[in-house]
Length: 448
Image (cartoon, rainbow, N blue to C red):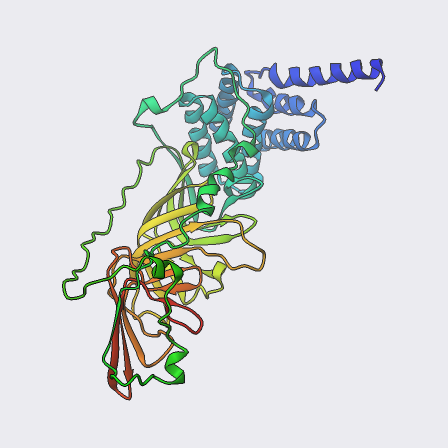
């Protein structure tokens, strides 16, 4: 590049940066729409030009009433007073407003509620929270997303959506505006939490299992007679290497079931700017997984990146199981929307064809890297107790009562409480054996 060309390019760049930082808005409502349009037209960016034009149309065609216009002007002026830049901060605000009308189709009542919520956020919160809020609301209206990055998204559809603001109760948690505070630009990629998933990828593959296979007692006879081909293909007494190295003996004569109390679910205080959902579907999506929480209700705490929910269903489609027969009904739960993972207690697990009734327990989900043709090891459910009656363990000669764990598509009989599961085998109507273990693992043709 020649020196003169470089100088021209540098001057152009400086002018663009200057326009992004130094701007002002008129106090006259009649001129405001045109002024906003002119500011964004000057950047010669197709997206900004279109957004400015659409906003000018909204301002003049009656989409916004006088009260709504007054709030829009107040928000824009206050963002300017707090030294927010035209790009990206004001652009995110106006883009979110345009998308709220054109993409989300908010009616006048919900549009007013959204603007009032935004006005309070700008009044109460500091720069980082406001910046996150503006990005989140733009993506919410433009992409139906509570969180959106190149790696993972939390998307929603259906149901009823409303907006609210509950003043925070702990003022110390709010980073208030300081005149000398520098505004740190936060790119969307900075919010991606792929690093946060490292610990999840290294998650305990033996979740719900302590490797103890309990004991085995048989009343089938002393002559070594076997069950025959049906039985030998359905049960294996082989122990894993871990068990051979460090077996744990259980003295059944003096064994007592462990005492366990399911945890109470303590939900966080719901406050700040809120997007409330009723009977909506949430989808956690990554390049590796997509899991649906259907027909749930809850509140999205925007500046905290936290969803606080109640009810809804999760299924095991990721693991190739039918959502009509294998699903979990949630109670109270919450999770960070920017991390593709969640855990919930006091859930109810149904598995038609395996369990006689729903089992109470805990569920975990995390999206972790896997091969394209590899089924996911999540979600993972584990029952609290070992009182689950199995209706089908793969052989009509076997009956079992115990815990229930579903890891992907793999079933075992462990429970959170750590109690023993009991398997009884029969032959020609007579009890043949009884085996007890903290965990029986069910395979395609083996029970270990």
